[in-house]
Amino acid sequence: MGTIGLSFGSPTSGQGIDVASTVAQMVAQLQGAEKPYKDQLTSLQSQDTVISNLGSLLSTLSNDINAITDPAGVLSGKQGSSSDSNTLLLLSATSTASAGSHTVTVQQLAQTSTEASSAVATTDTLSGSLTFHIGSGSSQTISVDPANNTVAGLATAINQAGLGISASVVTDSSGSRLALISQTSGAAGQITIDSSSLSNTTTGSAVSLTAGQPGQDALFTVDGIQIASATNTVTDAISGVTMQLLGKSTAPVQVEIDNDTASVTNALSTLVKDYNAVVSALTAQEGKDASGNAEPLFGSPIISQLQQMLSSAMTTPSATSLTSPTQVGVSLNSNGTLTLNTDQLASALNSNFSGVQTLFQNTNSFGLNLAKAVNNAGTGSTKSILTQAQNANSSAETSLNSTISTMDARIATQQTKLTASLNAANQTLQAIPLQLKMIDQIYSAITGYNQKGS
Image (cartoon, helix red, strand yellow):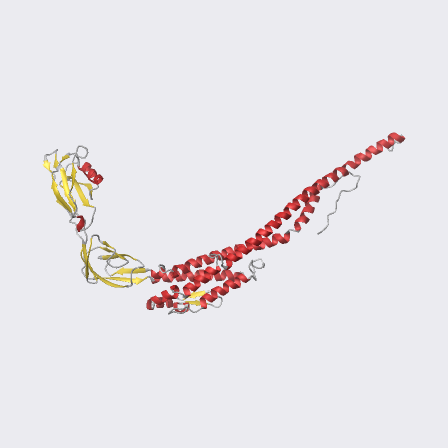
């Protein structure tokens, strides 16, 4: 520690001491003792930033791996096609669907039963009642009363009654018609008019009801098996497949269900990209930053541990029919990064899809080994390398902060004492000229000697 000299000129000048400047110099020297602790804290905080970034990159990679190792993930995805989209449209194929080809013929489409009344003027009033039943259901009656005695009023009353039919008003040049549509599609929703006494009280004429479209089920075959469906959206004819029937067949329609290899390729491409991002981040810690300073984890065993874990997961043989990721186009480069050969992957998916699945999903497979390594490396486990490093740094930072806080408190106390002492000394120094003057006056009074002359 250096020394600080007090500068106050001649002791009898009354100049005193520059207290603020002197105290600031003393405090600066005291704070110098804190520098090693603060430097160490800054270093640990820089490591924390890198560890957090690595944890984020490994978390992203973990999600990529899970998408492929999850039995319900991308390797279970299916896609389908129809040879005649004007007759049959394939809406979806879920993971429960099996890859294969099916032959479908459509004999008739499903229809929803409808009825319509004869035309009535909008302002005409009605009377009477209407009794009907839906499919094999019981009869239901809707009666006209003063509150609903128009076509529009009767439609509203039917809808509010919840009778299994929807009513609306259709108006053309002839007048307004009550339109009834069954709320149940197919044959089971057939509207049957049991009786009707509806009449137009304004004209004195009867209001008749005419069947429009009959309710009928869709009829079609799948691989020669006859199937009926109340709707044209069919969800259970082929397991995991939803189809939309659009028209009668003029020829058999081929429905192809395939594995969704495009999604698998995209998922593996993303995995390789994010794996390489982790490797690049680790490699960067082995050098210096743009200013020539060593990276925060330079020389840390954490880097070599993580690199070794990833490399081992990539090179350990898989206990499956396909034993290495290189067989699906994923190769390990000399710098630790990966390369994906999409042509080789496509070949593996097309020729041995089940083998690709086992490579990523079976016990002791490459996929699960890689998932375990990434989990043990990142922050997803309390025992993982980065989590332990975070905990160790946190403990050290807590201790350093406590030490620095204690030293700050001591420096603050000494600063207060120094300021008080120097202020007191300053008062004494500043009072010397006045005291000398008083002594001079006393001396003159006693001796009669005037130093300045008279």
